[in-house]
Length: 246
Image (cartoon, rainbow, N blue to C red; front, side, top):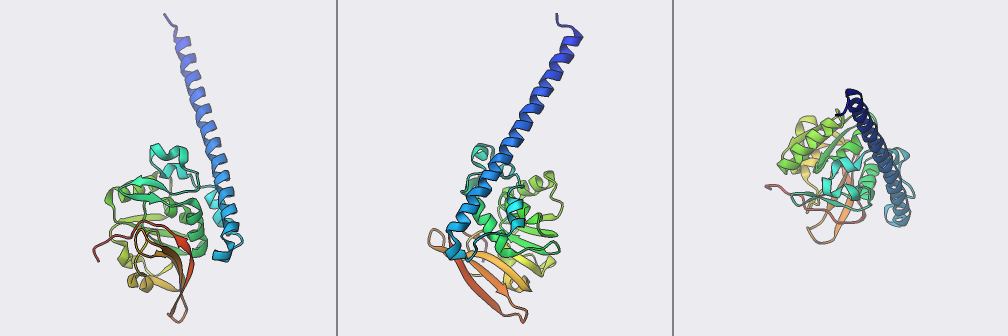
């Protein structure tokens, strides 16, 4: 018969081994994030001619190296969490390629006092990245299960400056407008007029435009101080379509 001392020793050993395993896993993910950042940096150089950017903002890259992408993917995708490619998250949706997340974040030029709207919460990863750079992030998801899961995930991870709403993002979130930046993470056939109206003069919108399963372009939309709008194509992309009742 085992003694009480033996039981205590066994329990302590189990806790020690569990703690060591968790530490090793955390270190592995940190190393994988660094490799992901290196992959993004290499791709930034490769796409310089298209984007006009030889490098992304250091703040953006620091956040990419910090946010735990493995927390935003399904359990069966964790092993691929830091590969530089999109991954399925269920309901026909995906978590965007890390390079595209970094590019859209960089183009938005969020500042610490900025308010940001995101259309298409998905897993919540893009919102989490932006939450490190802006004071408030408002994000809308039309697929209810994804929106509910993302809201809980962001809360659990401590993102107190992110609010999630279930609804049709085409119409934006009027209550908190105007926004310094708007990110749309699904492809629209055109730039939604409600989002243009909710963009602050001097603000920026980053949105993929084009038909589903055809050539789409990531667009930078800038609202000038006089209210006029200018657009610029950045590079070809492939996003799931923006859905809604319109």
